[in-house]
Length: 150
Ligand code: RB5
Image (cartoon, protein in one colour):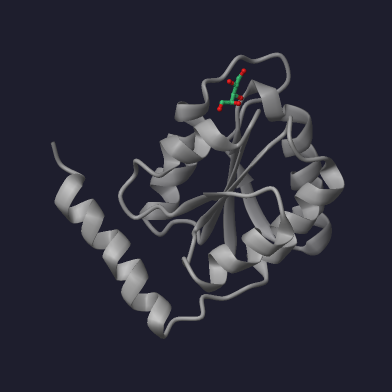
């Protein structure tokens, strides 16, 4: 499993902690995010990660900004991305089970490092349930087809 991670300037410390966690757990990952002392706009971080996940170069993305909201809105503009902004483990798990989400987002000003690790673990260890949920995910994809091009 290959993971792409990204962040803006509001989330440098939490991103570092999540990278340390991924390393501890033996996940393969690459950091496309903002480093110490840099100013980075969250849509740019979303693009760097989202386009690679959409292209299949990475299985999952993790995106962190101040709230998790802006970066998830931006990532969801990329065709093929289903980004979920989560601040509880139940949602992080069920967005995999039911939505086949491929990008997890959260906010460095919202969740602490301990909860963030739990969100990542729930997200990465849960598979898509398929069945009736496949039809609904297909409906999401159909929205992209119908409204994606201006
Ligand atoms: C940056 O200050 C902040 O606006 C950003 O990290 C994020 O919270 C936006 O949704």
